[in-house]
Length: 237
Image 1 (cartoon, rainbow, N blue to C red):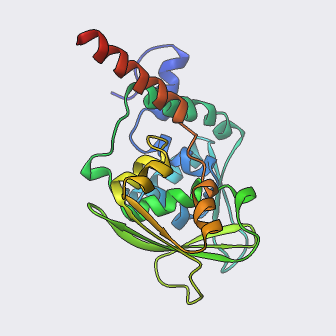
Image 2: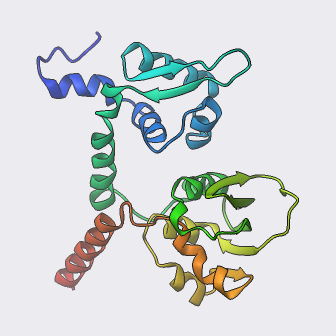
């Protein structure tokens, strides 16, 4: 039986957002992903065939428009006005989870390549250095990976292979702790002080590196959750 047989706007919204993948595809497009490969990098555990199917479904529902730029040019996917209307809902889901249903990453969460892609998505171009800056990042531990972040002309690119230019900065870090940092669970300076991160390069770049990324998207909810856990632990002791 299709649908919830319930004449209610909330039931209608669940028809659209009530599956595993749709909110994540909306998330990718609302933070700037437009190409098929770019969207897939944000949801790497989704098969390419399923992604194509879901994009067609979102297009049929009027949430996404498929733009073709001409022969040989890549297809672009963009949110329609209706799709844009879902962005506040998807953000609200994230903020709710940060406060009530989120915690430290499990081993299954620790995908180093996905973390590098998330760093690219969390980037703050206004904070970038003026000159071209390539950072070599080595993530160790469970799910570790290696990659390069290439900052040039106010944009950042994720490279899986050496871009072949001088490395300005090298970051060696525990993958789990870097996941925690990017989501706002722990300050970068604490990771450096505790030996979980080592930054090699000019002091001005080493100091600036963590400021190139926004780690505050869900930090307020995470801090409230931590404060609540501490209160509960205090009351129980």
